[in-house]
Length: 601
Ligand code: SF4
Ligand code: SF4
Image 1 (spheres, protein in one colour):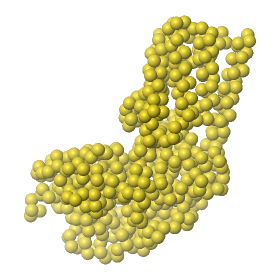
Image 2: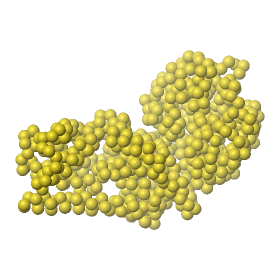
Image 3: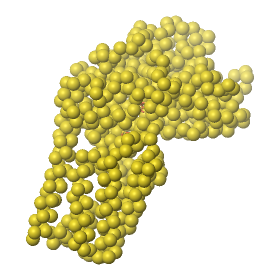
Image 4: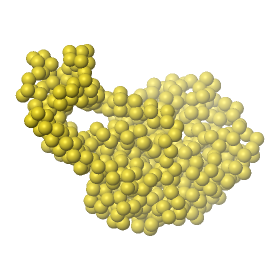
């Protein structure tokens, strides 16, 4: 009876210790602002993500195979032990419910071996190998690892040699100490991450709409939403986001892990109803404006933290309330408002280019509306890409035309947080497209494709738009072959991670040579440095992102670097010469295809 009483008291104390912290976290998340336009439906993709990322641990294993597998065994072991653990406590009260010696105990024993080996391996990695991305040594992690090891070891001893009172109590003590430690440490992710993954914003790097006219983005604690709060508390501090961040890798102060932890730190100190500005002790304005919105962090995060909406939300809070002062930013916004393009040219320059290239004007009779974008209309190299792609379309016999008037899609304003300028540009372009009666759009720019296809949904319905790589891949059988030198392909962030288009450009390039990948390719591609409006801001601090990537591309030894985005093209233009004494050629995929066309076309 004494032991049962002691067990009951210890159990209540352990559960109280758990709830003391967990309840406080839960109250903070619930007290945060509800997310505008959030819908749980459709449920299918959410359930798929939950099964794939939580139950199967697919992302954790894919990105860091060995430690990922070790982590997965620990997780699966926890699941296998759920019933055994309840039964263990029930034994203490004299009411076991699992039949002794059943298959279930053997299964748990097999998992106990795997978990014990895995947790020992993870301990060695964290405390002896010490990968830099894990950050400072966490003694909490050491204690948790030791407790998990003790839980598994005591189970195995009891399983093989028969249970004894001392083993039973050692196992119980480890369990009762482990439970309250969960919400007090980063192991809170054990409880929260299934929810943060299930309750994501619904699509990759999605910038949520503002709730109403009084919503200016993330300015103070009152603006932090429930999803942002949940994600902040779910971060497991693994550093995967930081490891892949182009800004952090090139010496900027931006660290995406600190974005998640900054939200958590702010909520811990001030709570969700505070009028204290978000930028300050926990979050840095300078860091927020160093982000290229490449999405590498968000893609890597195993617990569903969506960094891009938080970072863009912080920028919105600063720009929409006039708290961000940057000469280049101001110049960009003025150029967008006055000239309707990010490069600040008069629109007559666009007219001259259209006339010079004899591009047909879209009149509703052609199949495609060819969207020029700022780079295609005003940038010399972007114009060459448009000219090359127009040749390809003519070769294919596809009818197309360009709009008489077209403004910047608003991509840089959107990502830099200027909602007013973005809205003006989006509404103007949507009206132009409506008047034109265009049914299909094709563009050389992944940023234009993303903005028109996704961001415009807040302001109206645009015709379907595709990237020229998708268009050319569909017509692959009608394009000429000409095997040449090796081509290294750079995956643009807004085509790869944002649109999931990886194979189409490679298929197109395979017509003209052997396509090789740089070490960081496809989903792990390293940004060129232009996204998030950064192409138009001032000098980068630390190493230039474009130089870092150009060095990697040049080191492959390929004779040609192929880009599929005019922004990547412009970033690599100087970067390749800066990092290599004999730089490879730099061409867009359309230019490579056009070079194989008969001369008279
Ligand atoms: S979006 Fe890219 S640049 Fe921005 S924090 Fe994430 S990884 Fe870094
Ligand atoms: S935000 Fe995600 S990827 Fe980054 S440290 Fe936290 S859990 Fe890891």
